[in-house]
Image (cartoon, rainbow, N blue to C red; front, side):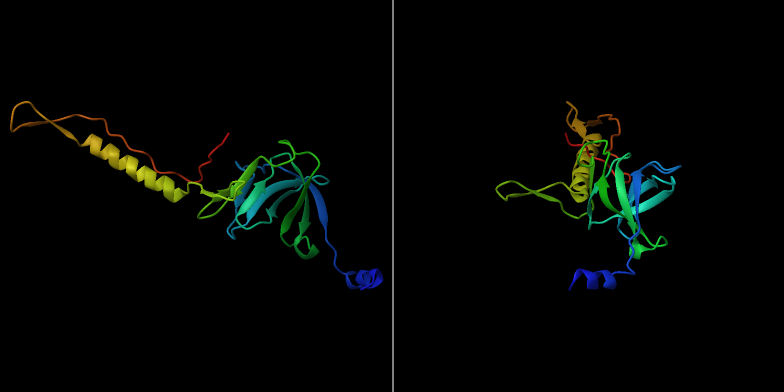
Length: 177
């Protein structure tokens, strides 16, 4: 195929791109979320007109989340402004350096491989929940234990303060340094 024939073939395919900056939209507390379709949505404002747009990051359960203030290029589904907006590229200013500061993973199991190829499984919510259940069982056992009194045939209940580990609420952020 020649360049001229490609130009003719793609003549009607317009891709509209806009420069934008990742920004927290009015009234919001986070600049990103997993939407109902399981896609990562990131809030941006266009440079030229300062329009708030929610753009989708491509990926399948693992995303680099650009920090607020990161400049991005967005394109629109099938070149139409009525379609979904997608973040196509990071460019220009990135507050945390070359790589976005957050990495978001949505998965049942997460593994990291070392240089020698050995897989290491990271804890999942099921692992944290199992640990919570074990800690709560231990606390319950402690809270309800009794001591045998020196006199045979009698027992004394040790008063204890009720202690429980609260279940997780929503998304918990684990910071590794």
